Length: 212
Image (cartoon, rainbow, N blue to C red; front, side, top):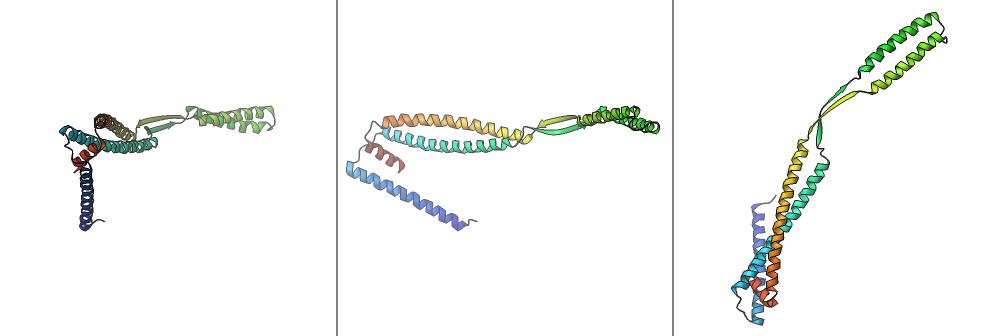
């Protein structure tokens, strides 16, 4: 857990770092002026350097934004793969109506067999015919039991819907940021093309002065 002292120490370190960098730039500019003299930089050159520096900083910021947006989109898409678009909100299973009739047929045939064996031997045709009918009725009933009528009602998964909305917003934001990056890249290219016409030491001095 950070304390107030930790925060103050961090601020002091950051300030010292900035001051050190500023001192290094001032020394570098002094060295260049001592070696080449202190040329009179035109307002146009200074403005170009400032515009270039600002555009480069903004493009770096936009590049980082796109990286962050891409990471968020990938995370959302990963979550979408595990979140079905539809959910089963209701499921009704209805027994096949043929089963009841076949059950009654089986009961009746069992009763007929019981009556038949009172008069005939089990291997006689009268009993065997009933046995055959009984086996067939049982097989049909077994098949019909497996044929159930199921009705399923689906509804929209709110989690999937919310994730899709987030993904759409992130992609729209990414498109906007990409367009801004392209615009900044055009500015950077245009300013660099003009500055390349000047001696490199002039550009370096102008950049140092802009930073200071």
